[in-house]
Amino acid sequence: MSSKADAPLFAVQNLSVRFGGFQALKEMSWSVRAGEILGIIGPNGAGKSTCFMAATNMVSHGGSLQLDGRDVTRAPAHHLPRAGLRRTFQQNAFFGGMTVLENMAGALLENRPSRLAQSVLAPWAESRKRRGIEAEARRHLLNYHVPEAVHHRLPGELSYGTQRMLSIALAAAPGARVVLLDEPAAGLGGPDMITLRGLLERMRAEGFAVVLIEHHMDLLMSIADEVVVLELGQVIAAGKPAEIQADPRVLEAYLGRAA
Ligand SMILES: Nc1ncnc2c1ncn2[C@@H]1O[C@H](COP(=O)(O)OP(=O)(O)O)[C@@H](O)[C@H]1O
Ligand SMILES: [Mg+2]
Image 1 (tube, rainbow, N blue to C red):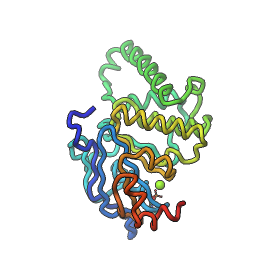
Image 2: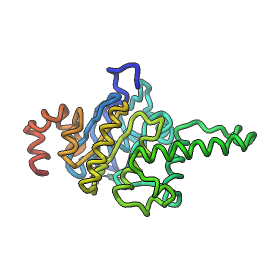
Image 3: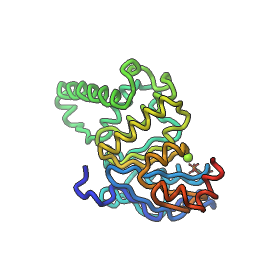
Image 4: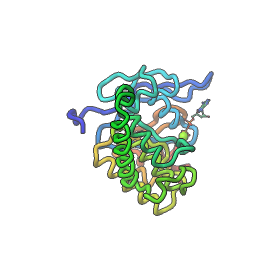
């Protein structure tokens, strides 16, 4: 997908976040390439979700963000999806009053420049475009295991597992290149876990840069290319999954307790 195969597609450097007097994140750095899955683990409260908030400019932070070689440290949060950076939330977040298909069509439109003038001058072109977007939304949802039968339902009516797939489908809308997933496996049963693993593998094969926060060690350690371990807002280890699993600091700080 990227011509500079070795260069990171997305890199955060020295990210720091304070909530009042509390330092939730301290100088965290990581990067991810196209076609790579970076895993982030750490105990509850370590600052994992905060690092996604900082990485998407949803909270004020120290440090810098580079997206495809461009400094986006000061880019407004709502510009980043169009620049190719999207995320899911730990809690599913949808437009609850819109159908699944409308949510998906909205995400597709969000990744594109809108042409207000065109819609005013040529309504017929606009409606043709809308039908095109709907067809694309339908295809994309099916591709992400959100079945046709629920496309006209409200997101809140879907099973929990299907809601998780919908949030990934929204984040991975065409135009996205870097996708940040915050505990996508949380609450999933066995069959949905298998579906999720397949999706993640496919996303990597398609050239997405994926950053995965996950508590499910089996899933994360078997799928991540690189792993970063966070504790009390600081990186305590980073490396290949096998290195992380053998790191005594990690075993003590996290894996030992979690096992
Ligand atoms: N908006 C906020 N205001 C104040 N403290 C926060 C806020 N968001 C998170 N925190 C605190 O920051 C720490 C890290 O939280 P979080 O990033 O959600 O951890 P994790 O995702 O690793 O479980 C926690 O101690 C949490 O209570
Ligand atoms: Mg979290």
